[in-house]
Image (tube, rainbow, N blue to C red; front, side, top):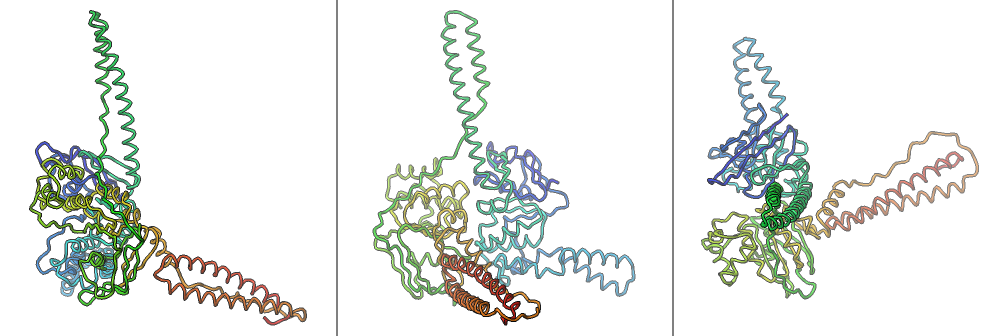
Length: 633
């Protein structure tokens, strides 16, 4: 069954510039589909047309009749005074309406014995129960816990929340509505890692249909099973997740390039032959002239393949400064509080040359605050930090601000970098700011374009410690690839905050997890860090098997002394092994923040558990033999 149908869709916002040009695709019931394309390709336009917020110029769109469609993109406007709890409760409006009608029917049946009232009440009651009407509080608390919406936030005015918080509340409301078709437009943009992982888990269990726009490549790989790319206003189809899409797109490009080159070689060969025939035809030979004309027509028929295009990469290279010595950063007993809440305390860290570190944690944990302390923009409550004497920092903040947003791009570089007009335009061109765009005021740029401009200015600085705060937040997939290319070539120290797990896993060789007022320091990649956390959460106290109950057997005298010695030795061995297990358990508790040490200790514990099981088995065997020999175990 088809849940979403888009047929020959066209839309243009400027005359002669069609953003959608015959777009056609369908999404079947229960599918998980990613809608891909560059910024401005028309992805959000498709969503707005599907929801009726925008009219198309031509073509048709349809959703399965009777199915409810929910969109996470624009935040609805709620009445003044609505709290977060009020907004969340709107998800149950259908159930609340049933509840009100049931209460009204109850009151009417007290004075009216009409059987129709009882039948209506019975059908409403069944629908109310089937829709989870008696369990809305449980569902609400479950979703709020997963998306980190605490009770104090639920009591706040919705209008007072930040844009990211409103998006999170709207996502919770949509999930609680239990719609059959979900349209997700950048659902992870304002979610921390914990909430993103919860959403991914929810979507893997969701029984409806999902069409998602996202620049989060890890999310796409985890959730979607098919990709539709909007390119030139039309749809390209990829039967797999994001990783498959990247590989298949490159394969198609190479195949088309090979076909184009083969075609051009044949055309060149025929053009040479046609030119030669024309020279010969000057002697008045009509047959040769007709052959030349026929060959030229054949050449035109061969021109079927356009040269495939690939976006030119940004010419990004950080200007690196030579680093001398091993000491980059030392942090001792750092503490910081805000409004009576301790963000972190007793933080002790050392960074050496060449390390690449990801600073992770939930929203509000204090990641950006810690970066500001390292940059000298904030002061800690206590503790101290020391930078190496030759360290030169380059910083790309999460929210980019310019001192003079009224200046155009060229003047921003001229005044900011003290360069000539031509040099400024050359550098802007390298970052895909060309033509009349360079004379726009900075204030007219999108968030992603402002990040790109700041990055353009940062390239000129000679640095050896690069600090990035959510560097990929406002960038599309292609732009993320550009900055990743620059970070990949950069050989200095790197410290970054990010929710982009693809970026984290690619560049981090060390993880700082800021949680519960402290920092867990893990030496390893993000995947290794996740595996270590999974092992830790799955670890349970060792279960030492108890001896199996033995049947009473008649005792036989004699020949027991040697067996008694062996049984006693086995008991001592078990006792010593259990003492070692106790010491190992203590060591595991002491190393709770050192995941590499924990991994080693868990491996030792597994080996010791096997040893204890074997010792108990041997003890049972010897005890039973002693019992059969007439001794006392």
